[in-house]
Image 1 (cartoon, rainbow, N blue to C red):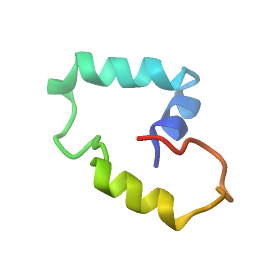
Image 2 (image 1 turned 30 degrees about the vertical axis):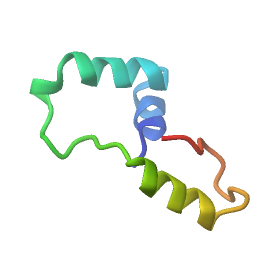
Image 3 (image 1 turned 180 degrees about the vertical axis):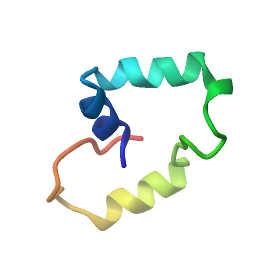
Image 4 (image 1 turned 180 degrees about the horizontal axis):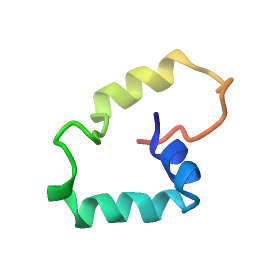
Length: 59
């Protein structure tokens, strides 16, 4: 599940969800949220020319 999905589920903007997690990181399990490294992001984007599911293509 992506941050976009959770934000939609709670009826808030994605950036609001991400800010809340960052501000209250101690309240979330350590594996709740992660960010791709530059290399992972590059590898993922190189595998998909166009996105069939829509959404964001940035880490």
